[in-house]
Length: 212
View 1: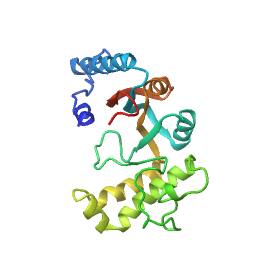
View 2 (view 1 turned 180 degrees about the horizontal axis):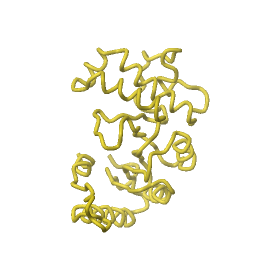
View 3 (view 1 turned 45 degrees about the horizontal axis):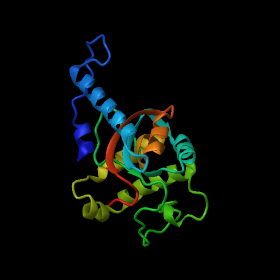
View 4 (view 1 turned 90 degrees about the vertical axis):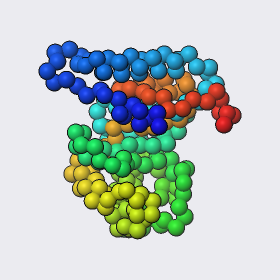
């Protein structure tokens, strides 16, 4: 709900402006983000934070794997994948959970048709670019080949969205525009300094790892 509020924030640039930010709305948005960062710094060291991280540019799975490796104390619960041109909004938004510890569907079998479909069943090191790329493509192919699954789980989606996504990533590569991470305040502030990170939006805060 909070994230959708940020998405709907009127932050479109004014092409005729000679200043940055180019609109009053953008200035308000940047002030809000700066305020969130300052509030994050003030939180107790025991705080557990969930935050959306956006990138300055789309990055490939090699950089995602490197980021995860360098931030092992964070849980990357969602890796958002670019599925169409930046100027187009395509729903549903697509991505994947990188650790293989999310919801595991035992009936899903990794096969030659859908290699690395289920990351939870992989014995080898799963934090690899080629595995992430293949995993995402297999997820999309599975959706295309199983229309009934789409109708059951995503009734407002169209199979053409998945077909267009597969075509897009085949032509442009599997790249991410941002991630959702969970971890301590200090760990998230450390990630904020990564050269690819553009902004941080707080999703949720708990006083400690024992909070519910």
